[in-house]
Length: 186
Image (cartoon, rainbow, N blue to C red; front, side, top):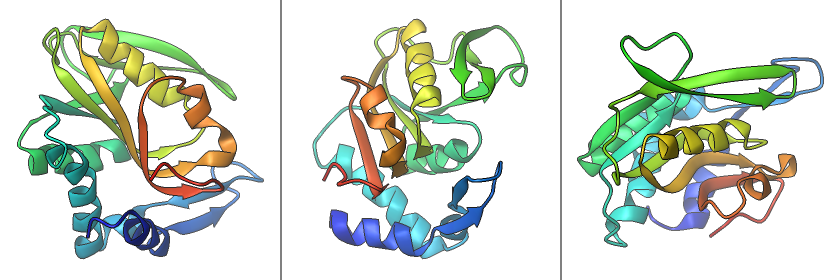
C-alpha cells in the first residue's frame, strides 16, 4: 500500500484518543493499537521505507527517538537494511555520549546519543511516532548534526498540525503519514 491517502486512513483507524493524558485537557494520540496490529504496522513501516527506496535516496542509518521512535525506527532500519541509532533520554546510554538540552512546555529535557553513533557525513533518517510542537524533533536533529551526521528528513507516523511542529522545524524536511488538524504533506 503506497497510496498516501490509504496509509493515512489506515493510521487513523488504528489511533486511540486518550483524554486528559498526560495532563488534564490534553487528548493523547496513542499508536499502541497500530503497533499491536502486525499487518497495519508492517504497512506503515513499508510506507516509510518506500519513500527512500523508490527515490533512490541513500541512507546509512535510521535514528529513533525514545521510546516509540525506537519501535518504528528499529523496524524501519531493518526494512531498509541499515543500522539503528537510539536517541535516548539523558543517563540511559553507557559510555561517552553527546547531549542536547531543550525546552518543553513544563521545563526542559536532555537527550543523548553515543559519541560514536554516527560517522561524519553519514546520511540519517530521523524517526518518531508523533510530531507535536517540534521541540524533541529539533533537538534530536541538532544533536545528530552535532555528531557530524547529515540528517535527510524527519519522518513521523502522526503529525498534530495544530501544535505547529512542522513550522517550528523550519527548513528541515518533514514527512508525516497521517496529519491531524491540517492538510498533510502528500
